[in-house]
Image 1 (cartoon, helix red, strand yellow):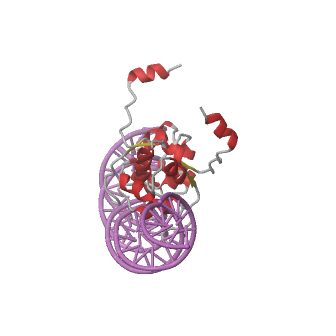
Image 2 (cartoon, rainbow over the protein chains, first blue to last red):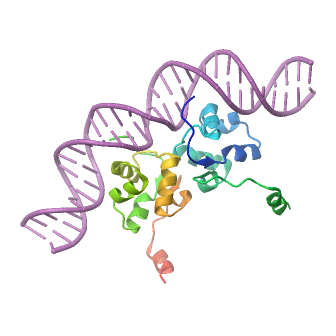
Image 3 (cartoon, each protein chain N blue to C red):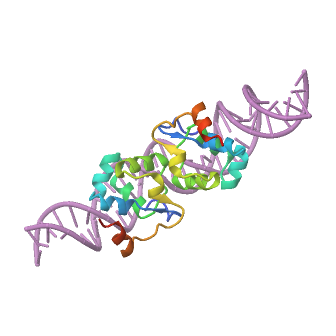
Length: 85
Length: 85
DNA sequence: ACATAATGTAGCATATACACTACATTTTGA
DNA sequence: TCAAAATGTAGTGTATATGCTACATTATGT
């Protein structure tokens, strides 16, 4: 293992899966090791801003949509209904 | 010196000065060494997301308003005029 | 002009981000 | 059910984020 559990939240896994990317594929897009993506998703370490900016670009969302000091809300059914076309 | 020049941009100094804080004061708010603030402002290293989230809270702006892969625009006179009440 | 505060520079020390390899476990699809 | 793909776990190694101390330089206010 690398770091210990970290004290903030991220939506990297959700965003990656939503885009149909494997860790391998996401890792290639931003030139990091696939394990690095895993550690971030499991909140086992605290990525740098540079890596976060690369993730942000690769996933097409801003930093604030991806990292937060507070837990992100779960997507509930009403939200899904609202976002349905 | 600690790290080398970093490949992205931040507005920490501008935001700090605008709020009338010294590095010492900002550092105390977020429990880091004042030199750490200096290194970030001079882009001499790549802070972690956790530190960035703390800065974000202390300065009252989102991550995207503080860090960017592209240079921030300079505040020009017309912008100042526009934002004047 | 002078004191004081704020900032920069330059070390050294420690923790950890991230790379990488190898193998175990889980998931997925045929 | 079985093979392949995706993910998790473990351990090692290196670079660097960050702490900290000390001194030099540059504002700032009086």
